[in-house]
Amino acid sequence: MVLEDMRDLLLASDSPDQFFKPIRTLPIVIFLLTSDVTILITSFVLPQYYNPLDYQRHPSLYATLLYLQITLWVLTVIADQLITRKHQKSQLSGFLEFNRKIMPCMRAFLITVTSCSILLLTSAAVAWDYCPREKETCSQFVPLTPAHYVQIILSLQTCILLPVCLAYSVRIHQFNASHPLPDILEGQMVYSLSRSLPAFEDVGIRETTDDTLLEKQAEAIHFLKEHNARLSRKILSLTDQLGRYSDANV
Image 1 (cartoon, helix red, strand yellow):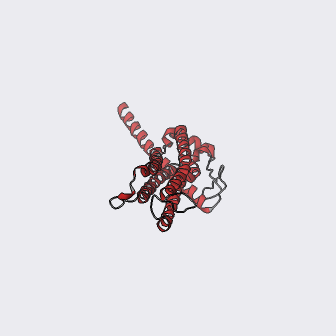
Image 2 (cartoon, rainbow, N blue to C red; image 1 turned 90 degrees about the horizontal axis):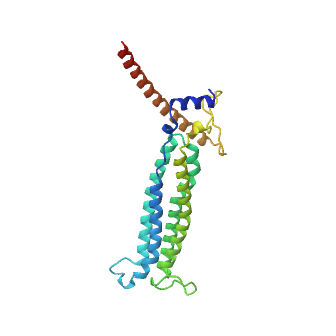
Image 3 (cartoon, rainbow, N blue to C red; image 1 turned 90 degrees about the vertical axis):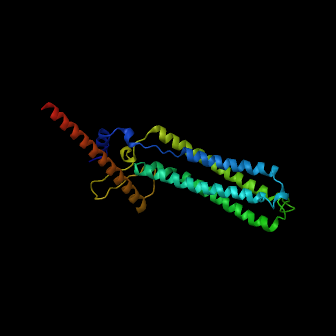
């Protein structure tokens, strides 16, 4: 069966909306970006009200900012797991190419926060050895206090996360608004009758590794199994309706 015949057969049995499942990750990304911006603002506001003489009763300013960054990292790990699960469900629904293309944005969230957390830990070790007090500069040549280094790193983190989150949100919104068909119906995957296993033709993708082919085969098989299950349920429903119609005419 050629691709066009398969497409017509599947679309004739199901409406296009039944194939589409939106990716609802925008609230997670918005929450993550809001948390990052809040921590950045806090790093600039908190030093104005912090009294270094209260260090015996309260955590130091530098430690407080590090605690906030650790909290953001934990939230990012949780958000990364939730987003990954939702995209995996979308892949199992047949939207393989879109999720493959948006994968760099997904990975950028955790990579950015983790990298900046490592920088903060490194700066904390340097500040511990070379900065006598929190309100004093660490070097006579560079007039920066430990809090300034935290502000610089957090600003860098926000400058990276902000465009990444916006780009991800725009692409997800466009995907959900367009209601596309699964890749197998859009011509992204083409079956060959000359092979026992399906072969795939990529559009815009140059990867030809065995892992890529096996992944696409698994996604296509899962999608077709779900479609067969829907067809079975419809056949049972039509058979039941036909039986009741026959009984009514007897």
